[in-house]
Amino acid sequence: MHSARLLIATGHADVLDSLQGALGPSYLTASVAHAEELPAALQVLRPDLVLLDWRLPGGDAAALCAAMESEGQSIPVIAVLAEAHPEDEAAVYAAGAVDYVAVPALSPALLARVHMHLLLRRPSTPENVWLDTMVLLGGSSALQAAMPY
Image (cartoon, rainbow, N blue to C red; front, side, top):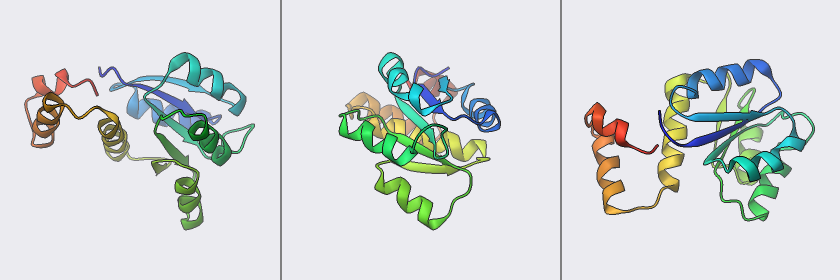
């Protein structure tokens, strides 16, 4: 299991089940079901990445994303969309999210996006560059297990 902590913010049980099913075996996951719970969860859990349902009950996801950025929280946000429409995609990026996924998301694509954004956030030390290169080139499973993300 990887040590990265992911916070899933969705009030929709089917979306939560889908995301936890795909990400749970590889990452530590926690969830909130309402916009009011998000600020406290961010402070307590200090996640490495947030998956924010754009239909999160109790709040405007774009405003929540922008508030996180304005408060200096440099946590990457991947927006979770019910359907990917061009206007929604533009709104996601305008609000400060780093990426988006449309649900139901295919597990390999979701894992790749999460992994990529965690790697981009990691310090670029010679050891990390070497490990990342080995994984991208198909390094051994033992090497991949040693990866913190």
